[in-house]
View 1 (tube, rainbow, N blue to C red):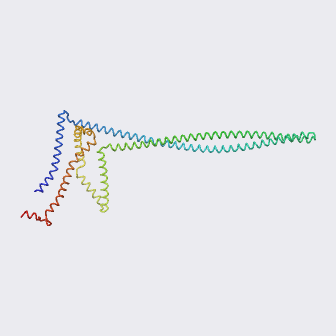
View 2 (spheres, helix red, strand yellow; view 1 turned 90 degrees about the vertical axis):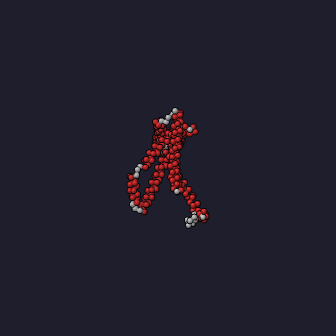
View 3 (tube, rainbow, N blue to C red; view 1 turned 180 degrees about the vertical axis):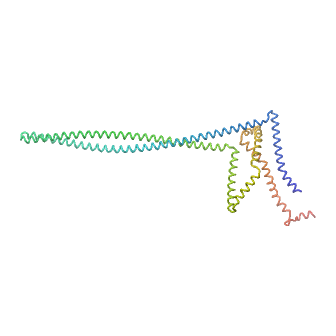
Length: 390
């Protein structure tokens, strides 16, 4: 009888706890209704629905705003990538132009060196020609002196000396003409050298300008890279904010999806291993699963509908109850706190139903050593029991 009464007590204890919790909730609801009646305020479901719709619109607007910012950041990132590509192409073109200018400057320097060499050779030839002219003039003077000295000697010799003097004078005139042409050639070479120097200076200035433009392009490319890094960090921040915007329900759903994926993966691995050991087991399990799924009702759908219905009923009451307490008023408009409280209320009866059998098992396991100590080894009562019976 005691054992049967204990079993009935264990079965009735969860029902008593559920009834007590339901009575407590009904008392709180009655007190809240009495307070609303005393203050002249009534609970309006449409107002709560309107508040929920406003919250939904606000959260949707925030999500749209974050999405728009993410799209803007993505567009700006794409534009910066295109700009960086254009700047890189301009930098390559500038480098190529700089290399061409350096090559042209090297060619002009070689030409300028050749012109200097030719000018030096022309000056050398001009000096030689001047020396030859001086020698010719000296010979002409000597010939004239000889002619004047031999003027009174003989007429034929005088005529010969005179011809020699005229020939020497003609050679001197030719040497002077050659010297003038050499001087003109030297002036032309000097002008060519000056032009080559001017071109080399222009190419050097163009190379400096190209170097400045390349440095400017490098700075622009560095600024574009820094802007791209800033945009990447902003996109990462927006992605994190978008992930965090799901709230407690979003995190719970994400964790549930991860657990479901892991369970499916492990179940597939186990089925594959079992199918290798027992061929055809996987197909049989799939067939049984399909048969059972077709015959069983949609438990997950019913549970989801029940949770949604209870959530819709408890959330306005929790918001109003928290708002009536001054210390907890700031949590009355926090959706995460409300959702966590609703889930806690839903999980409390399940925890009670799970903890009561566990506590019962623990109590039974703790009482077994005492009962075995009272009885003997063969299951008969000990000496103390015999004395009491006598």
